[in-house]
Length: 365
Image (cartoon, rainbow, N blue to C red; front, top):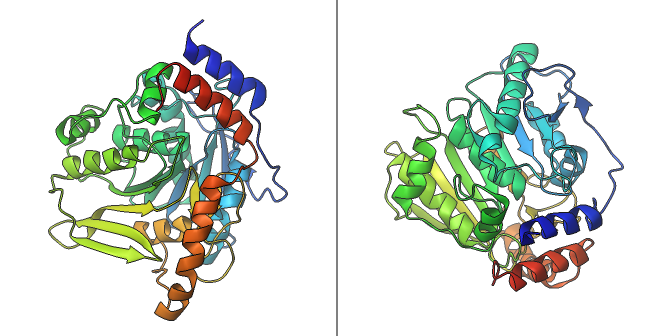
C-alpha cells in the first residue's frame, strides 16, 4: 500500500471535527446544476439583501463543515453588517473521508469539471436566484479550501473579481495525493513564470485578472509558509508586475506587503502572521474590525483576516484601528500567536500521526 493511501486511511479513521457547531446560521441552496463534484451548497442571505449585492464564496478546511467554518470565521455575521451574500460549498465524506476539497485532483480543479464546476454552478444559481452582481463575486478559503480557492481563481478568472488564500497552495502544484503532500511540505516549487503559466493554461481568459490577498502563518507545520510565497509569485507573474512591493508596513504588528497596479489599486497583498501555526487568523469579537470565535485552526492572533479580506474585496470599510488601541494589542497578539503554535490543540494527535508518517516517507522535513 502506498504511504499516501495509509495516511488518508489514518486521517479518515481518526480525524473528526474537533468541536460541534452550536449556531448553524446557514440554509441549503436547494437546486443548482450541474453538480459533477457532488458537493453540498449552503448559503447565508442577510435580511433585506439589496438587488446587486456582492457574493463571497467561502471554502472550509479539512475536517470542517460549512457551519463550523462560518462560526469560527464570522463571515455570516459580517454579511449582516455590510449587506452581502455568502455561499459555502461543502465537501461530503463520499468524496473525501477527511472532508477536504480535492484540490490536488486535476479532474476536480479543471474548468468545467468536478468540484470546480459544481462551485461555479452554485455561483451561477446565486446570481440568478438572488440578484447578485456578477461583477462582485469573490472567493476565499482555508488550507484545502485555500488551495481550492486558488483553483477557482485560475480556472474561472472571469467569475471572480478577487480572492483570498489562507494557508493555501499555488494552483498547479500537485496532480495527485502524493504530490499534494510534497507541496504542503514545501517541495515542488517553481519559478514565477512557470507558476503564472499554470494559471494562464487553466482557461482562455486574457484578463483582467482577479486581485489576490494571501495569508499564512510563518510557524505553520501543516502547510509550509513557502507556499504562501509561491501564491504571491504566481499572481505577480499573472498580473505582470515586478517582485518589489509598492508598500511594506506593519498591520496590527504583522508584516504586510502590497503590490499595486498602475492606477495605485492593490492587485496582490500578503500578510505573514509571525509565530502563528496552521489556521485562520482572527480577532474574535463583535466590535469594529473583529469577527468570529477561536477554536481548532481558528486562531486568535489579534488581527481579523475576515474583516481585512472583506475590505480588500471592497465590500466593507477599512478596519484600521486607532493607533493607541492597536499598540496595546501588539504584545498580546504575538504571545497568543506563539502559544497557538506551541500548545496542543484538539485534533493535534491526528496531525502528529500524519506528520510522523510524512517524515518517515521523506515527504516532510
